[in-house]
Structures are given as C-alpha cells and as structure tokens.
Picture 1 (cartoon, helix red, strand yellow):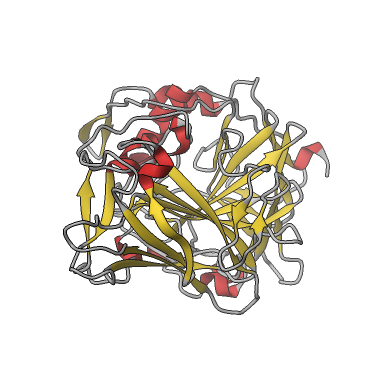
Picture 2 (cartoon, one colour):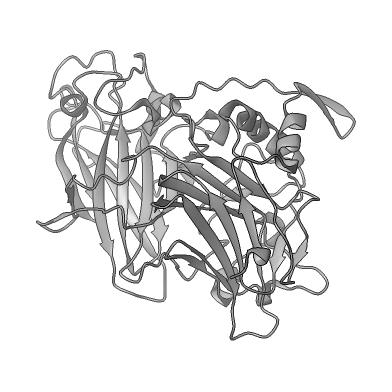
Length: 450
C-alpha cells in the first residue's frame, strides 16, 4: 500500500491534536452558555511511553475517505498530564462524535516504541442519507491479528441513539510500527468501514501476559501459558461492589471500570457491599498500576445466614470459540484480619472449582494489600450463540460465629486470540449496556460489552 493512502501517527511532528490539547488545558471552559470548572488531579502509577490518539471529530481529518491520494495526517506523542486534561473534557465535548468513513481498504500507521500496547477503537454507529449501518460490513486488523469483523448480527440488537462502543485490545509490537487496517467487505456492494477515534497507549510489560507463569485451566488438571504472540480483547472490567471509575482515575492507562450490579444474578438479598476499614497499601507482590485503589477499597460480600450455601453469582456474556483469561482482584479490607485463615471461602468459574480454600490474607500477607488471581477458561467450542461465563463466590464451612463471608473486589475478562490469530466474534456492537455516570443529556453512552 502506498504512503498516500496511509495516515501516519508520528511522535515527532506538531499537529492539530497538539493544538486541541492545548485548548483543552484551560481550567474554565464554557459549554451551552454555562461555566464549567475542570479540576484534574491524577495520581498516576504508570506513565505510558506512547500516547497516540487519532480523533475523527477533528475538522482536519476528512469526513469521507475514499480516494487514493489522501496524503498524511500526523498525531504527535504527547505527555500524560495534557492527555489527562483531554480525557477530563471529553465527556462534555464529544456529544456527537464524527466519523472517518472508508469505502476502500485503509491503513493507519502509528510509530511507537516496541512492547505491549492498548488499542482502543471507538465506534458510534449511525444512519444518515447515503450510508446505512446494514452496509457497515468490514474487518479491522492490526499486526497479523484480526481484531473484529462486523456482520448483520453485529447490529441485530443495536439502538443507534444509545450505542457508543469502545473495543479495547492488547497487542505486542516488536518493530516499532503498528498498522491498523480497515477493510470493507469485498462481497457486499457499497460496503464501508468507519471509526470515530483510535487510541494507541503503551502498557507495562507483564501486565496481563506473563509468558513464564503457568495458569490454571479451569476444569482440567493441565496448565496454560499465554505467550506474547497472543492478542487480547477486553470483554469485561468490573469494579465489584463499587462505582464507575472513569479513565482519568485509572492508574495511568485510561482504563474504565464499571459497576457489577447488572451482571449479578441474585436479587441482592444474599449479597451486599462493604467498604474497607483499612488503608489500601501497595506491596512488592503486585505493581501499583495493576488496578486503582478504588477497586480494592470496596467489595461485594455474601451475607452469613448460618449455612455454607450463601453465594453471589455473576453471569458475563462471552463469544464461543475462544479461551479466556479471567483475573479476580482481591483485598482483605477488614481491620480484624490478623492471620492466615481469617477468611476462607470458595470460588467457582464456569461451574467448576477455581479455589476450594480461597484465603486472601495467605495470598497477600496482610490486610489492605491488593492481590489478584488469574485463571484460563475454555469456551473454544464454536456455537452460533453467545455463552455466559459464570462466576460464583460461596461462604466457607464453619459456624456463623467463626467464619467470615466471601468477598470479591474486582474482575477482568479477556478473550485470547485463536489459532487463526483472530479475535473476531459475531457480535461486534450493541450486546451490552450500562448506565455511564458521565453521560450527558443527548450524549452517547459507552458500552464495553459486545
């Protein structure tokens, strides 16, 4: 592909995006004839090496890209503090995101450092004269991976007025060049591809993929190793028992953590929310950037009723045909916890025992110290329907006076690329919704479950 039909994101050259960020750095801005004060304080545990954002809302990017002689658009690498202010203002100013529409294959080239990267693709499905979502049939690839592929099923349950979707992927970049290619379906007349915004943000090595670590394969005696040759897609990221955590309050990687209530199958009578009565502190066991402190400061707990049958269950929709990485975040948040064995409970994933004697104090060596546990779940059997990944925590054995109820603080689920280097599932958009507390009247809501 020629350079003329590539949009190149470089770290060395000034551009409109730098000017946009400079504008966004003002403390006071006006919006709809009202004065809005923006105060930004970010206690970052990780500062990304690469932060590259291509936003189609910019007037400098063509709305319709279908020619071969487009030229180049350059997005510079910027610093964390400026991008933090940009994220703070985004919910106010991005009420009606514009799109880049591609009627021919098109590649965005990002020049980055080597190492693992987040790729976030923002989509706001639309319908207007000349373009209809039934023709938005396309695939997106990066490196040698197929990230997504839309079909008519992608839009089967889509509500266009409430459908802002962010697809987050993790890919390792070896050569310092990341190509993201949008390819309209060659089998459909007038097919087109679209995107609203692309983020490329570096992430710490070994955050999710640790090649030398063997992970338990749920329901089997064997172990599983995730290699850097795998790509990941974030399916769920939940702050269990807590509130929505916006990207600005993450640990430097602009992840969003959403409440768990809509995935909880019980009516609430068996579970409740507890708030830590100890200070959350870091240790050498896990880096501070693994999760924000807010995740570990709250938990959902199972009420003690005198039996060991009290439980809390979550159902998380996933695509069939893939393996999944399930990460459970724990933190002992009681100031009464002084020893191993203080709180022992059971964890089940996909109706199989994941932990028969879960002991947070044993894992973390103290109260108020975050820890996580990783598991691999096999959903590789292909079906045409989505599956539900079940997660259950149950109180341990003992009298009501002696045992402490089960707790869980956070949850992340990632799809692993298959043997064909694909992450594409049948439902790209519109398969899950939640109420975004940043949502403005008339604005689009971000859905992270597809």
